[in-house]
Image (cartoon, rainbow over all chains, first blue to last red; front, side):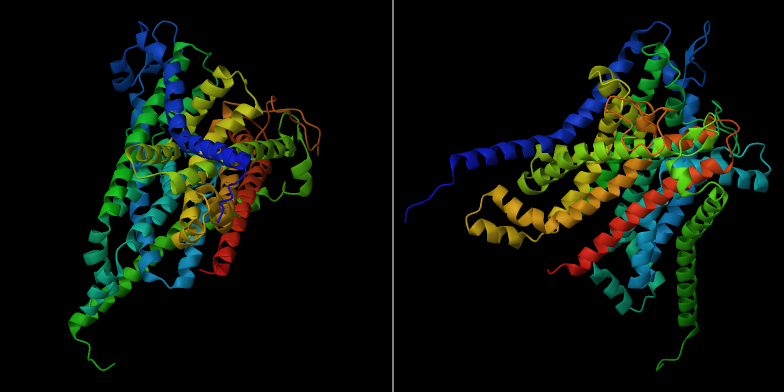
Length: 300
Length: 295
């Protein structure tokens, strides 16, 4: 039988298309490098400025970027702000998120499970600026009312808002982790007469602990990188906080608040980009850790 | 019951019941307060909420009036950014799922996708400012803002598309290869038609995420105010700056003193409502398609 080939233009078109597919496939690497390159490129010159030092940037709480005589670029107060808000958010979100994940995965019927999962997915879709608006209006009033704090926009407010924002991601990744535990574990436990609760804390939690850790890490990544909600909900004080009712400013909020006012290519502007490099590095490490943990599970 | 309960069993069962209700309370306590908050937002927004509010332009220094320019601006940003992100994202997912072998380079790509998804939105804003506004000379414009948003949504589109592609059974592909089809013919004739619904759902979910993003557009193309005729469907060009609903909400609630009280609430409700509506539609589509699936 004679072999009939395809017309040469079709072969060529297919090759061209596959070339485009390969290019798109590689694009993610190009974009990540591009982000780092462009942000770092703007930040770089400031490293060689006489009135800037990297140790001051990281370890000084003095932030006077527009001062004429005594200019200071220390972001320690903002690092403390990010850290305190994230920590509080995780203290609230981790128990509730993992608790909800356990309930959804182990304790409820399939109808309720589907409904809850859809609600959680919808919660994850609420835009951060709407969360910020809720913090600014509803939450701040509640906080002033219940704690008697002079201002309602503070660590507590930002922490609660960020917790509500991170819960959906913790629930969905945590539920995946629990689902990944083989059913034979559950059957073995139940056959020995364990109740569901005994099954959860004796068998499932130890078996799924890496996945749950990854869920928490991804929650942390989201909380650290969140901008608009904390910009609106945490107040605007650049200082190292003393208590939970202090206003703070986070690294992300600092960029969002000042980028519009910093003259282009001034040192102030470049330092804000350097803060971006710092944030990029932090979230990179957190996401990398989460990925390694998840991949560790898959290999097993 | 055939067995008599020993005290030990009774304690065990009581603990089980307590644990179950405690976890239930945890799940519910994350949801109910939020529903109350949303109800409160809607109630406060009521005085301004009307069709008129959607098509009117802001008046008296944004203290009164509607949100038309912001609404149209958001639609512009969403449509253009998805028009860029969706094809590249889908093709990248095709590469990763159908072509890529398991080697170090492709693991590097996976790592890049994961990290791209985790980059904070404000860093995307810095990138957009450096790359599109200045380096590419697009200036502060709709095109700069849309491209910034596109790069932000791309990793999520890649992830959801991969999931959709991976759900097509391998036997389908093998059957196609066995009758002599090339890799691309298999993808076009078998893989894409069988996963298109999942791919579309993933893209629709990104509509709402793009519409809600604020930080990336704030420094690349969205402005506080732009004069636009009420009800004008095409008020902007690609090189223009535009208003955006998300940024409008931020501006109204933090930068404009003396704004009529219900207006920021109404803006928040419109943004929240449209986001939830789009997502609910995507989820309904997914559930419907899943029930229809034949394998």
